[in-house]
Amino acid sequence: MKYIATAIAAAALSMSFTASAANTSEVNASDISMKVSSHANEATIQLTESGQPLKNYPVTVKSLRTNHLQTSDDGSLTFHNRSSHSQTMTIVVEGKNGEKLTTQRFIGRQS
Image (cartoon, rainbow, N blue to C red; front, top):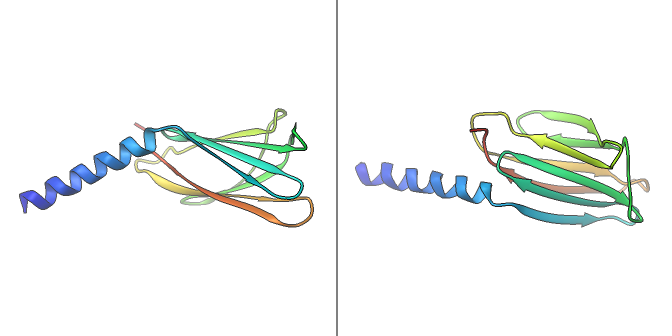
């Protein structure tokens, strides 16, 4: 039983280190580009259209609950995981032509 508990603790510690590593990805549609960077317990979403920031553009973030948010004047939005455990969030942006950009990001818990 001790070995199982040790293995579970090691796996949890490994996941928290993985969540702490900064990581960036980019998703594109015909008219909108979405770049997502994550570090520790937060993810920053950057939306652009032809290289220009999309300000006040709607973004849906699904984690333990669904959040309907908007980008700021610089086309960015920062989402914080304030729960006591790590989680995967799904980010959905609908392009101006109706296509949906969707990406997932694993973010750590608040310490």
